[in-house]
Image 1 (tube, rainbow, N blue to C red):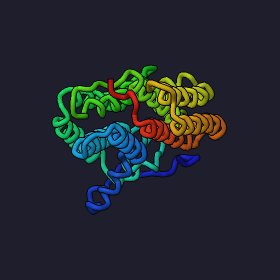
Image 2: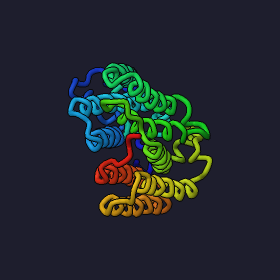
Image 3: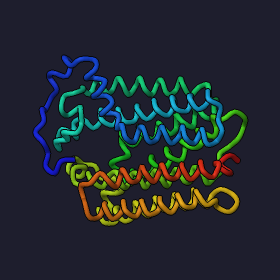
Image 4: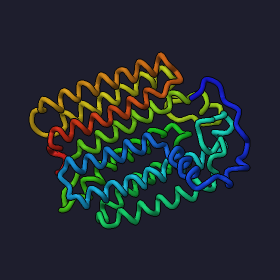
Length: 297
């Protein structure tokens, strides 16, 4: 994010004249592409690590991708006025590259596609994923401005690996430690993600948990939560930890620590959130290299 708000148009009078290709590019930018790709990749990798058939892996990919797209687009649609107020020139809806109406329509279409794609995975899996998406929308609509801003992240990230397990053939259930890892990753990602925007958010009336805790407390808490997620991912499966996942866990803990230091010393940096996503990737690597032992109860 730039140090000072850039000058942006109050409206998007030319957005409707843009080519379809330009609109697609703007929608890709507005979907929060990094987190969307990371979360989708993690869930797909977990399905592969659990030995899911190819058809199930593809279903998981499609369901999670469309769900994440709906959350990203709804965020930029609902926050359009707020982003304009603080000059978020990194947002396509602010620069006029896409209209709020287009984002709304795309978000609704994506959530409908996600529900339809989830139906073949079974009622329990479909309901679990719908719950995760509902949490994302609840955050965008209201909870981001409350002390419970962490809750949608915790619930959604806990439900996503549970969805992957429930989508597998058979009647297996996720082991308790697996959604616990997801919940901790979600809370850590939320804390790290909000750090660069604390002041801009406060200026537009957003006061989630990180805003109430303050920058220093949030910067210290984010890596601690992420480190705990890694510890649970490595020690949660039954039996002694294997060498490779244990080593990956150590790297993930160190990465989380770096995220905390950067968050405290570089207040506007997006790096802490990027590093939080790296920790999430490393968690899944630890799970996959351990053979996803004990993930299915």
